[in-house]
Image 1 (tube, protein in one colour):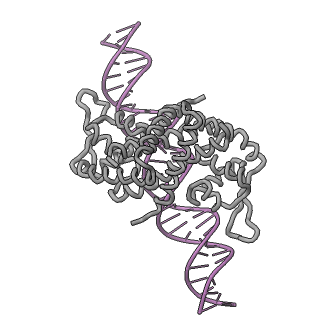
Image 2 (cartoon, chains in turn orange, yellow, green, purple):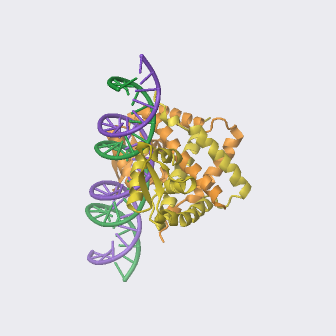
Image 3 (cartoon, protein in one colour):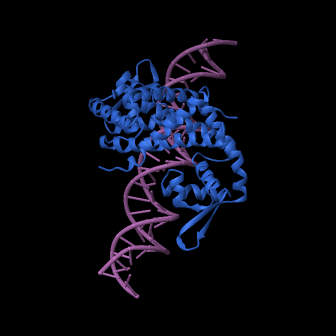
Length: 148
Length: 148
DNA sequence: GGCTAAAGGTTATGCGACTAACTATCCTTG
DNA sequence: CAAGGATAGTTAGTCGCATAACCTTTAGCC
């Protein structure tokens, strides 16, 4: 690939990353959330109570990030942690009542974000784009761990 | 749009953002750079010396981020700042000799990153994808600034 | 011309995310 | 069953990026 195209691609990805996050931040602020928190809450809403390790996999980030986010969500009263019966190391995280009540509005905000992101693209093209994006995500999987 | 598709889209974007950045970080580390720095260096290489305000536009980030990055690049000896003749407020940033010498290797790394990102996608599809990504970037432009 | 508004930079602060290093538990296996 | 390695979480420290507040200089305008 020539540099011009490579740079256009990298730049587009970086630009989308920054702006998508910025827009997410301003929308999530309506609910008192910060970007990243929605991944934890939606994972809990979809797959039920789970350990922080599992959350780290679902939310696509490292355990230390989960530790901090879960602590903040706990302080906000949206989530609670309990000791796992059978493994004293693990902490099982689950939604509180207040957390559950936030899921509906969160899903609406999250949907609105996606709609604004792809405005002007017809449904078929969106499906195609989604496939391509998931392919990219797969390509990039765990590559960052490589140390020479 | 239904929630499932919206979430798939948002999640794909967030995942790509995190992983692309992580891979970029590990590749740029070979050159002693951190992610974000490449945007400044490539902007200077492409469009020549310019003020920090212009760099902020080109690198798609806010002036304070530029201030800090430029200072680090200056400390690393890759960039230098001079007072603008005619406007005492502005600082003109330019590449040093060492900075210029880094551009070649940087372009190679940057190209390799893009190639790894789209591995397994044929050239025509990459072009199409690039167009879609730039459309998304346009959709998201400055939306984050909105305050209700 | 002097007063106010706008613009370029910097500083301070907060957030997410990472790596590295640490603790505590669990599980293997010799 | 005791020793060593793997695993769940936490803590500490760093970086990019953002916003808010501030300082300085420029520019507009009676």
